Image (spheres, rainbow, N blue to C red):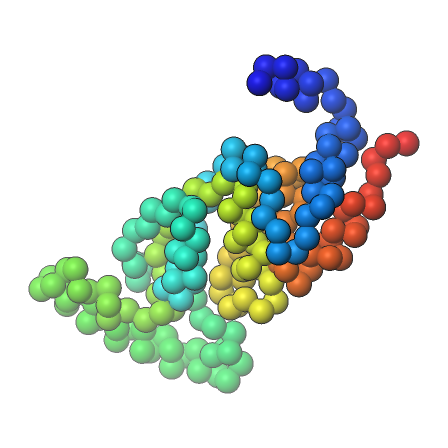
Length: 191
C-alpha cells in the first residue's frame, strides 16, 4: 500500500488523469465501476421532500440518517403544480396539514408525521461510497428519473465532482453516458 501511495504521489496531473481514463476504459452505461471505488466516501447533508426521500432510501449501500419531517423546513413544490397555478392551493392544504400535525404531536407523536404531505421536507445525512454514488447518479440523474430526486442527485454529483474530480469524471445519468464517455476517453492531457 505504501508503494502505491508513493507511486501516485510521484505522478503528475496528466498521468493521474490518464490512470483514471484507463480504469474507465471498458466501462459501459450499465456497468458498475471498480470495487476499489468503495474506498472513497462522501457525506452529504440534504433537505429533501417525502417524495424524494422515498427514492433516496432505496440506495441501500448508503448510510442514511434522517430526522423527522419538519414543517419548518418548508415544502418542495412540484413544477407541475406551479405550471397549472395551484401552488397557493397546495400551500393552503399544507398549512392545514401542519395545524393537524401540531395537534397530533401532543396526542400521538409517533403518528403526527403521517398527516404531512409528500411535499414536506426532512433533513438527511447521507454517507455514500463513490461506487454507490455512481449507481445513484446513473439512475437518478437520467432524464427518466423523477424530477425531485433528479435535482438532488444532480447537485450531489456536482459536489462530488468538485471534491473528487478524477474519481467522479464518468458520473452521469445513463442517458448521457455515451457522450461523456466519448469526450472523457478521447481527452488526452499528455503534450
